[in-house]
Image (cartoon, rainbow, N blue to C red; front, side):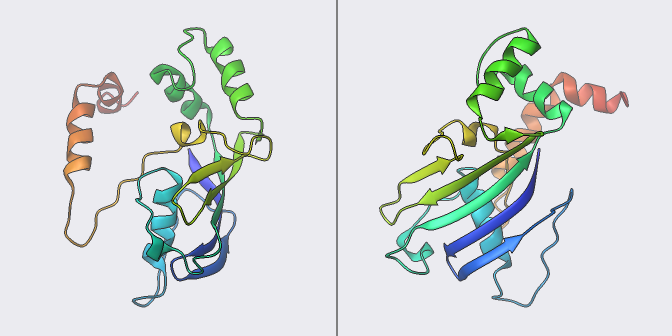
Length: 175
């Protein structure tokens, strides 16, 4: 999965910003205090890995709005199916039908949605069909963030869990 588009409004120092046609990597370059980390925090908020506070609102009387497009490749669907995300059906085609029904804004393998955060801290994921689709964070890719203090425990734990995984073995075997 990869983020294809990102739009941020009223989040920390960003009044309004848009990034379109994001490829496999996004490199943010700029002087200190220009908003690079703010963009990363917005992505972490999308995935549920950022704790929102009152200080995050540029204008406290307005909601934070983050719009995103998330592209799924065939291997992404396979991986989500193998983990039983959305439903536990063993049959891939049956699983894919349930998956597609859960995300009505999924068109041409891109899921479009808007995260709306109120000043009370309430988050909702609007996909244009449902005002709050709580399943969206379930499919958002894991974002690892290493801060200036180098807190890497979460990454280390995931790497250790992955060591016994058959996917790692396939990577080792070049399959």
